[in-house]
Image (tube, rainbow, N blue to C red; front, side):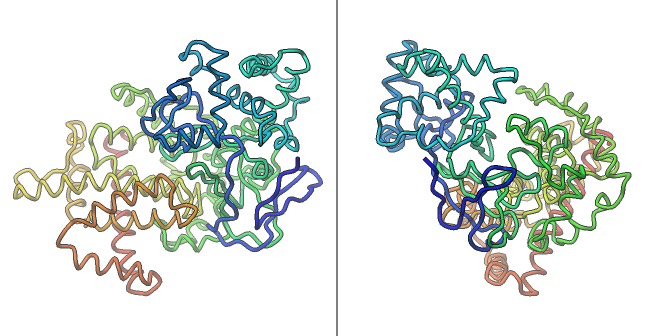
Length: 545
């Protein structure tokens, strides 16, 4: 059964890619191209007990009282999963086939997805028929390592679904698994990372580029396809199947399971992130972002300096292990990783992987140690010097996430600053650990800066910027936007801010006016610059870099 394309999208044959999605009208940067509801949506095994199996909201969901292998945030989601999500059939099959609830919770996600497809046969919606037109590259996969594991999962899916495990049945089940692994998306959460899998047959036909013109943003049970930059009527829609900011070698490895080789400009010319971002068509959108001047994307030294490009490519050899859970174990690893990034730091190539990921871990490390001022400085550095060059679209979810991180940290430093002020200067310090205070110079400058910054207004303006990346109606339910509104509601209760609110209101009403632009530059741009510059000083004083 061929999938139907939603309004605004046309499916066309492609001479080398098989099929492709094209827009039927011109789409502006950031606009929604289409919204997709899933054929299959399941939490990953690692997040089974921490996200709702129906809406994917993170929290403390309760298990299904019968199978105890699906978790729901409330009765409404459980009822919806039972009636529309197919859990009524899956639940009975799980209980019948696997007697231990613990064992049911250990069934791999691909096997659970296969079960849903097999169990849908004879139902109102046969998922297998909906997947018929998808390519699984089963013949190629058969020659690859791991094929025996695929067959084992297929046998398990057949057995748990009450189907026979004959050679023919297993072969058919393997083909379904291949289609799932080729076409399903990792359902991404801004805080938790990959929390599940999402399959929708039409969306699965979007082809790949490492310089994509569109991206997928997950909101609840939906996948929102947005234009990364302006797409002209009739153009093909291209998304990235992998992290396009990683090195060429890592991108090739990540794309290998899809059985094609990318021939985009980023790959054929081995462009670093700075060279790739220089090609971003709608660079002027960054005029109203932390970057402040969109032409910086085109004029960064790494765009035209071979020596810096060579340093960026050499970073591809760096392979960092994940941070340990224990806070006390993280600092030695952070010291090691930052030391290995010394050439990137020295060349001011902040946006080159793996430095941004290490800076993110450093900000988290400081925040969890309640060194909020140091965390804030590093987060500002990350947001100003890394994000715009990695993700040049100012509305990209990663950029919104890190803006929100600054806003949340400011909520903590603002409280500390206010408490210090109330003590009449007797202990006018923002909370820092003994190690942080040992870096006396940068510590004092951070404290002075935070006393001079209107932290509440800066927080409020950053939250507005976060909300602007998630326009209604399709993105209003995005978890990050909901969190931003909650923080904003708390700020709205503060008294004595009439003058500040008047200026913020002016900026919101007419952001392009000279007065509003000047206010934004002072209230956001200059303040983040001060903090980001101090973030560089933190690395020098706390890590000797």
